[in-house]
Length: 243
Image 1 (cartoon, rainbow, N blue to C red):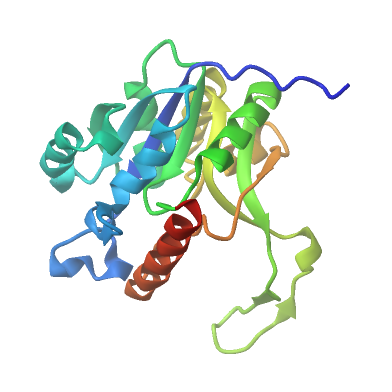
Image 2: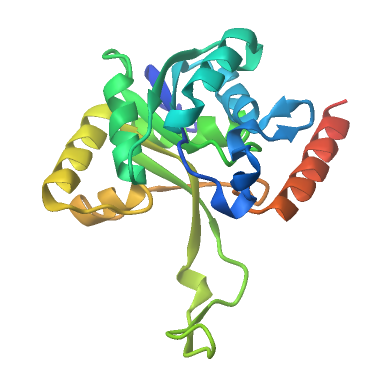
């Protein structure tokens, strides 16, 4: 008989949307969370996926300081954001933003799922798989195997070496932790001035290897204007397959 999956405890979803979106050309006046994608904004798509997960009891959005009023208005009117309980300004770097978001999470939440708002095509299946793993192991990193050949280059002009892709994984989000553990890791990193680009690096540095939960190629990060057309096509295909 297969082992019964662990019960998933109360979870806070922390959506990080505090970046400046410079590679998207945000100088034109719009940042990634507010880009239109299939009738909703990018931030609404990200929130909607967590809204469909029963274990997620609240969503905390960490936004750019200049966007808080707009995020507040959107959360008040969008059914996709009905679980949003708090909106907080982000910090200078990602760890600062995540630290601010964790402080705003409800005290009763046992797990915190940190997700990039710029990954709007995440699915409830990906989220639930990561939550189950974190409930059992204490933490979970959503990731996919690297399929491209990866080179190193010291000067950006010549390739120096080829990495063994059989051991390479591309990190995605959500990255899920027991709340007490994440708080401890963030506090330790603050004391040491350690500021990694994702939360899994905290676990790797202070605890050890972090369990991997399989992600998906469509759970990619929206980075450039060209990506928006690709994401729109992927969303249309998903909608057609669900019809």
